[in-house]
Length: 404
Image 1 (cartoon, rainbow, N blue to C red):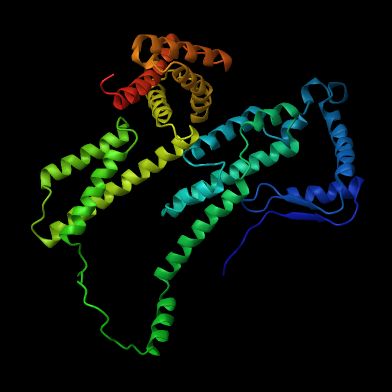
Image 2 (cartoon, one colour; image 1 turned 180 degrees about the vertical axis):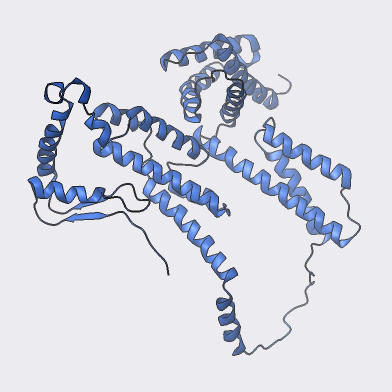
């Protein structure tokens, strides 16, 4: 038996007002299991009546905030009973967006493609919880938030959350079906019984090599070449995770060799290559998601990662981060100066021939960007960013024009 839990829904098909309206709405707030919020479907346009009723109700409640009514020591903050602390809500949404940073959140098709490769159901369940948390957060702000809070959320809100939640659930359902099929003896029995009535006729169609459960040398060689290509095609050769995978790969095959003398060794080498390919594919998927945030510019994706890595090291030492602790803060700043740096390079195509002048130009853009976004940063912070951006442009230029 399958149990489905859904939020309580109140449907209005007739006009309600005053006490009856308030009573109907408050029924939605009754908690049920893990559901924190309910939804209202209105076919009778009760919005104006609700606003008048709600205003009168809050006015009455706010008497308990009046020291003249209840005494200075007995004031109740009604607003914080209806909505959580505003800063806490904003912080919660920032943390949600940090978790979702490796995914495309403004294009459902891209998002669907990204999660389609996830085979770990627990990872999908965690992702779904994060998406639901974001949805609930936005619903609270949209319903109860004041103008200041709504303005703060305008830059944080994710507009396609319902569709994203559905896609994640669809992927979870697919995995559930596979698990049910694999573990359900009755299903296998039904299939076996059905196959008893099938008559098989065999006829020769063509001659073909039969592979007995293991790869040929040619297939293994193709997998080897694919692995090497995956290493060389990675857009960030300085990524610590990439370096770790590469070193482990080299160490393994240095110890055990590249050739195989037995079928067992052959299969072992093949599985080792599969593991490396999987890790590289996951890493490249995250790289691609990050590049999309910079319109495919791998230079700024790499700079972003270097800042993220530096922040992780600083956090371990109890030091302040560069720009901010969240990826979105880093992205907002880098995107703010990216177009200006690109324009400088476009306007003066010889600027990259003068390393010192270009580095000074980038430093000016970094400082201007920080001032525009009201970011506090030390000279060490600005120098860190300037060095990484400059080296990316100069490396790209020197690779394109090696004789320049």
